[in-house]
Image (cartoon, rainbow, N blue to C red):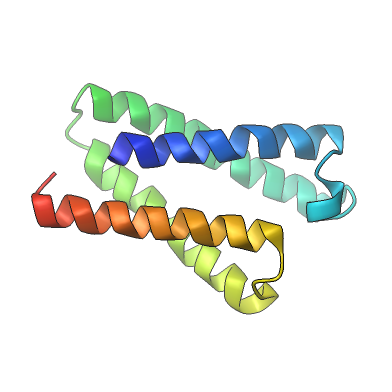
Length: 115
């Protein structure tokens, strides 16, 4: 289930990063600015980290689970904060809240079942 949640990151982030690069996400993210380029870099970092954590989880690396929970913790906190600051009318925020719910559910399920 951790791998599936990390995979969800990639399923969402790869098209978003591509759209930010080619301009097809302008309606959701606004025009190309330095701030949007920084956001693209943050998304790229989350995507690369997610891909690496998928591999680490598959090979049962001892740090895979805590590192996955750390990534999810960062994502959950920024997604929740962005919903409070921006509101929930944005499709970006709605997608973020969906991912947040999945990640919280995965953390709870993993905690209850012991992995």
